[in-house]
Length: 204
Image 1 (cartoon, rainbow, N blue to C red):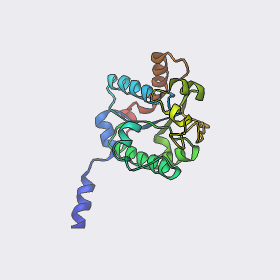
Image 2: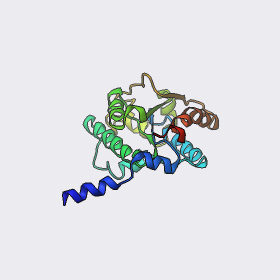
Image 3: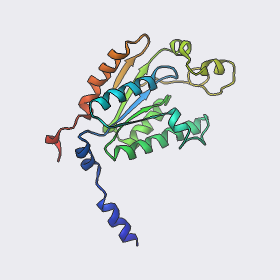
């Protein structure tokens, strides 16, 4: 029986064949930044633009992950690590199907992002730092989370009662204070497209 299982998995198409079929290079584009920095907004616009260019993508963010696969996790240090570990493992599975992942998560420390990079693979991990100062994010506060954190209703809130470590050498830094959204997305595309563009001449 075990031999039959191995035979089935041996017949599954590998990542390279799926990339050839989809005509794209699978990557994980990892957006990090404070709550309110604009990660999900920019991730959604980037996905829309890539789809228009015939790239096949999937977004993972706090809303679709915390409501499902990670709904049993809290916001303790241990659960934050486990949250990112699961996301990285799921991202790797998608990527092995040839899909481009756009992940939008605070992922607040260098160590936690390094863990994600090691799981996914350094060559496939594009770290994009959505850089907006705390005061700007707190003014936006689209979900009222900073207000609750300041009132003590939310514990271990990044930027208020828990630290955020800015990436030291991100693939791309996006300043998102008073952005021209269209120009911001164009700048991201200019940097990301060479990484995901499929070149049949490079297929081994």
